[in-house]
Amino acid sequence: MSSRLGSTPMMKYISTRGNAPELTFEDVLLTGLASDGGLYVPKEAPHYTLEEIESWRDLPYTELAHKIVYPFVEGCVDADALKGMLEDVYNNTNFGHKAIAPLQQLDNNEYVLELFHGPTLAFKDFALQLLGRLLDYVVTRRKEKVVIMGATSGDTGSAAIEGTKACDNVDIFILHPYGKVSEVQRRQMTTVEGDNIYNIAIEGNFDEAQDMVKASFGDQSFLRGERKLVAVNSINWARIMAQIVYYFYSSLNLGGPVRPMAYSVPTGNFGDIFAGYMARKMGLPIEQLIIATNNNDVLHRLMSKNQYEVRSLKHTITPSMDIAVSSNFERLLFDLYDRDGARLAGLMAKMNARDDVVSLDEDKLAKARELFDSLAVDEQTTVETMQLVYNETGYLLDPHTAIGVKAARECRRNPNIPMITLGTAHPVKFEDAVGRAGYEMPELPHHLTDLMEREERLTVLPSDLETVQQFIADNTFRD
Ligand SMILES: *Cc1c(COP(=O)(O)O)cnc(C)c1O
Image (cartoon, rainbow, N blue to C red; front, side, top):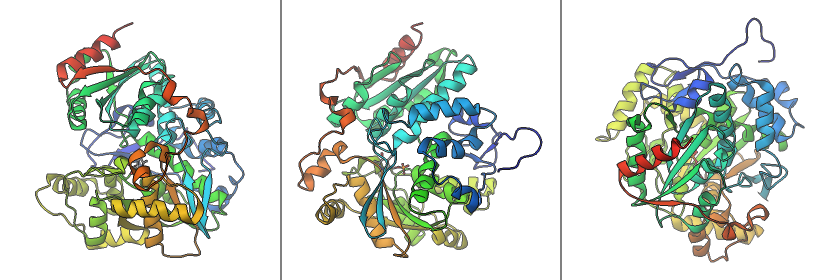
């Protein structure tokens, strides 16, 4: 990467199903799903030598982020503009901890990487804070305006709203099921100030809200052709890109890259752990990646038994990992199947048909197992792990992170390699689990102490597509 000849290299992105146009970063940012149904990945990821990585050892988070992110956006985003965005995102007023992603030690060679010091107290802030600024930069330059529409049952909505509040040319409409989101989570969405933010509480359940979002993406005519809808869910490449940074950061802080690391990742949609896979591909020595799931264990069944079978969603005390299908897993499959898009398209068609149990080719699965292990952790074990770690250290884990720690301890291959569990959320967001473990709710972190007093803004609407679309159109054309 360090020496380049000729014209500016602009990274190209290709679809995992091999039948959609190659795009630049800018188009990938605005596109979401590829036209052939696949997901976009870099055509060629940058690769760094150990010496290059070593030379980044003392960089603060923001500067390291610039090293990692810039090659993915080069040619679309100016280097100085990116620097400004990163400084705006990863600083001590936005993140409540100066180290941005600090490490907490649990035991000898065992750590939690705290990714919950951002404005909404979950790791999604790392990506969505940057995504909002990148979107605004790109659409402003194109003299366009876009509308973000999404449905949430918790974390993603608040992180997306916080990430877009300062955008001039992005309006955001987030639907949540009325009365079915915890108070902290609701307040994290409804107390954000900004006249481009609309919280819609739907008199219905999450699935109804999600269906209205899907229908709106499918037929955007209610926007009368003057605006485009943009998705900010975890299939958006820009989110993965931003998450690669903290793998490098944590490794460098624990003596990498000379020393390899192992990571355990509380997993739902496979976005966060795929960022770890990317870090390894870019040259960071990672010995092991552990897929830690709750009882929504479609990936664990595949990894352990080579049986891919989609089951209906179960609601658990770790709601941010409640998924039936892990969309980003397709990005890994693409590499396992030697980037053969046509073959992958066939495999995905079988996997998505859901009428049969699908198996991977044994050699492909064997390749995945060289790096990945997996474990599914039930609710009782999750709560017991919160108690165990509290008794050992006085440190209260959020339930998602507890699943990661349990899997780290069960699946660890080499005790001499530092094991880092990604701490994906702050426990204050998950009252049910904290209560079940028998603890008082922790205090809100210092940058959020007045959350319960802040003024809320939301609009309650019936679960009716036309009403919701009318509301969006009316508020989008206000200027
Ligand atoms: C989103 C989320 C996860 C799952 O991350 P994926 O990238 O979807 O695998 C885990 N824990 C928390 C707290 C989350 O918000």
